[in-house]
Image (cartoon, rainbow, N blue to C red):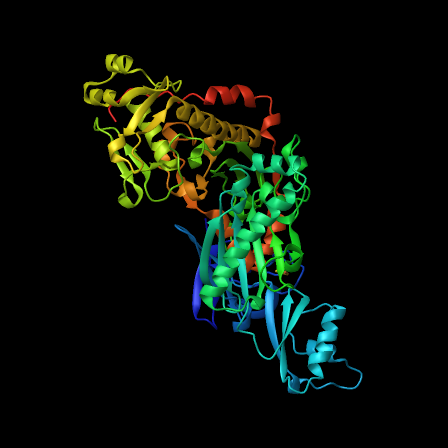
Length: 608
Ligand code: FES
């Protein structure tokens, strides 16, 4: 493809970009992203820039102007937005720093009030953006502060075009916001200084709703069966978030009154329970949510421990059980100034496996009830990936080799360890393709000489076949840690659901796996799994030449970007518009495919 040179004389920088790309793209790739207020639709005029072509200067809309030949772009400093990096465990992405929340200080002395003007109208003269008329209570506060002789100035707090509060004196450098990812199990909170874009803290806690059940279905049922159920569950999540707010306020020594914004994501059930929306419709076919669009609420309506006038914004859901966490995953993937045509398969591994296939212009999304097995729940010795969890297993030397988190005495096995051990047992032939754990004698009759020693760990507990990973004397709790036939079945059901979901979604989209640019694995647990082993057991699809990459806690990254950037917010609605939600349970092929995929893939016998 051909490239053209773009020169930025004022910044003394040049870049080469594809012919036909827009000036806005050129700016972004030179590291000078513009504030595309309308999302680059040519409507707001905010992206107008001066360019020079063949010696002629003109003003044009950067989001509309396509480049076919060499060009100079004259960017004023105030047109360039500051970009910031959003980090999660193993990823980092940039976004334009341009939050919805703004503080402006007005010195009373600077207000000259010409005849025929109001105080408010004089203030507007000082702003470089459009604003709406203030509410009555804010107009009253304005009058009070303006006429109070001890007050020399005031700080106005805007959420987009709307005045939401007025503080006395100059507090412009004290403005905070939270991005929150409500997981079924864990809640993560990211605290930002919205005056400068700096992230000043990361906090996490267990979701208090766990007291009512580990998975979302149990919690939905609790709402339906108990008269106070919804109230209890809503209070539990609000209290979890409030405890994180209090922790942050204390640790950072900030005033909670200066927290004015909160952006949240979470699955569809979490959205209902956080907002106090009765979730019955979500719990039965055809699984519809009460409100799918994004919701903007005042903090006081939810009892959040921040400024009562603060704005709380829950990201939009995609449909059914494909929630705002998936929206956030997609937002984390938006690249500055890039429109990408390549198709990807994105799998968010969790209790509720969410799958998206496609590109920016067309996507299909679905969810599959994988169950909590992959997160270690419902597994006899399953546990979360914390200290004492077995995270890696290797049987290929004919011995059991384990890696334990923090090298502590083992206590149980986490999701990544579980996938490892199943793959290894499959490789050495301890389990067969149907997932049956062989009896000791049966195994000895078949196994390669190198692996004979492993037979010693095959036994039975309460009439169920098990494979002992760690004998009692070496564990934290003094009991054998083993994998039972039941555990293997639970993993088979989970991996069958995810794999089937992926394949049916690709089919529905009308592409073959080989046409994918890559497969992305999201979810905190996705960080740690050995992708090759995930493919070996048929949890993740594998297509020749298609790489698989883990993108870590992408939902957390997406919700942070949403908090920080109006560009990202503006693109959200467009993104959602291009996603169709598919209810896999209604697909006539689902059952058959699923039962087929519960088995493990056939592998040639080999030394591993
Ligand atoms: Fe170009 Fe709005 S007109 S971004």
